[in-house]
Amino acid sequence: MRKVGATFGLLAVVSLGFAAASVSAATPVEIQKGFEADARQGTPGFAGFSAPRGEQFFKARHGNDWTCASCHTENPLGPGRHAKTSKNIAPLAPSANSQRFTDIASVEKWFRRNCNDVLGRACTAQEKGDVLQYLLSLR
Amino acid sequence: MDNATKRLAFDLTVWIVSLFVVLVLIAHQAMAESSVAPASNDRWKAECGSCHVAYPPRLLPAQAWRRMMSQLDKHFGADASLDAKAAAEIGAFLEQNAASGRRAREPADTLRITESGWFQREHRKVPAATWKHPAAKSAANCAACHTLAEQGDFRERNIRIPR
Picture 1 (cartoon, chains in turn green, blue):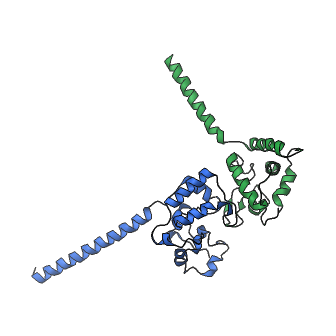
Picture 2 (tube, each protein chain N blue to C red):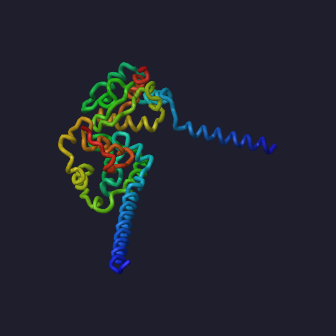
Picture 3 (tube, each protein chain N blue to C red):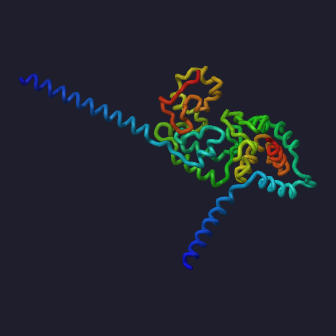
């Protein structure tokens, strides 16, 4: 009886461990769902995300010198290069780089910084979702 | 053996032993210097190393790092802001391992490592053409010549100048 209890105890600890480990890990689709929930609240008349709109946003200038593509290039399936330091940047599209859009804190950090550099303001949930929709459409 | 020969033998032995001791001391000093592992911190490496080489803390005085960390949202023309927890950990690491000795007395009016007096002295023999080489692009690109800069190793023997 005691042995069974110990086994259950061990199982409980192991599954708790897995649950804790999976808290920070997310999938790009889950992250997109988060943007969707935010957009439903923040964008009046929200009608879903659009890959073509995201592509246009990604490649266009928004008042400042840099575009998203200045560093990530016009082909986010390939490696990028920092516009100022020339340091290599791993591909941004999830199909080319499985690490991308798997950590919400990292996603929010880079949108915060890069939107500030490219637009001089924070991006809306609509804009972030459109860009992710575009990146997810790339194969 | 006469006295003169004995004396010569003694003098020679003393000289050779002294020379040996001095050489061993020099070698020991050089090895000690090269085997000191550069200060490292995982969060510093990940955050400061994502857009450029994670510049070792010993390259700037503590007060320069403090100023750098206080204006990360305007970091040489880019937003490099961090959340408060990461900023606190990295700031403490940078200040604890900041420049000591002569480098610590650099004026803190510039945050650019390349404008420090010691940097200019160390690189005074680098020709202008090398700085403009396409593989280097910028004096901030340590790894263009310091092949092990990513590991914090800036020793002379690991320098390869692009041609």
